Length: 432
Image 1 (cartoon, rainbow, N blue to C red):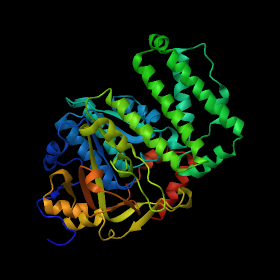
Image 2 (image 1 turned 90 degrees about the vertical axis):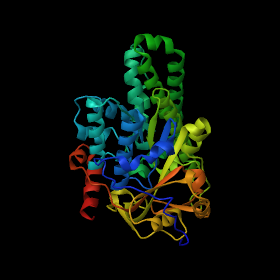
Image 3 (image 1 turned 120 degrees about the vertical axis):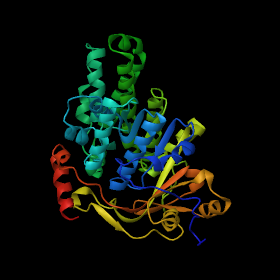
Image 4 (image 1 turned 135 degrees about the vertical axis):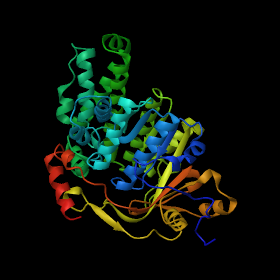
């Protein structure tokens, strides 16, 4: 055995990442998952074709073979209801759903279109139905407006005589994840009195919603009330996060991950088994640590603490390829970073050396020799960065993809994106 290379007994080759192909190479998932109620599937970077395909293919297996009933994506909780409506038969235009129902611009690719089309078809014909949820803060984590609008729309039904403070929406800022720095700067430029008034108005709404639960449920439904209440919670969390940004930007991630864990629990109250899809840094059971930045607690650690063995994590690694850039804003036109082979000794390098194609490794069933190799690993590549890790603590399974490319742009969905986003993305595409 070569140093840094797993034995053949540890490696489970995957026939393909194509979600339309037969799934008999995924039967190992039965034992790896067991009776867990929540299975999280990570990705090393957002916006890569191969990770979209992997999650689609694994969801197919988990729904068709193991009876999982919900797909919970790292996307806005508030916006996700539009996606769920579409896969259950609404007549909305799918291109518009992709552009507005999935945040962080992650719906603007043909792989996400194919994924939703499969979920829609599954709900039409299959014995096992599947629902879609977002788990993240609203407005791509930069705008309170989607959350405020959702809560006010509910209150118009539940409490028609109540008039929400109009200044909330006027004070809140609109924006996209493509322009997050500008959005945060706009918030910081608000007078302190305006920021405080917005926070106070949200707190008053939260108190009103909580104290009038019985009245509101009688006026609407329990489901509608609970949905609106959680929409308000994630909106309040976003307000808290942007307030913290001015003092300690790292606290934004702590608040966000804690809120995402609460959203997963909210969904789990409504489904027996769910799939969570998010970045490795969110799903892992290990503090997120990047060089020069203090470690923070991700969603996965919250869920592991609350759910124990009912929480399973499938992490990812990759070899070479292109990942969406994180060094520049989208309107610079720089959309990707070209990456060479992973750093020697990293988890990605060990996985890459172990087989020429896509593979899965069950970290709970390693031989002593293979376990020692994984125990010696202390870093993992997340996009273009390397983060500290302890793989045996962080993940139950790791799936490796030898090469990654940017997801294929969905030009039909781009047509429903904001004009500035369309322009920036199309300029970036021309440079690919």
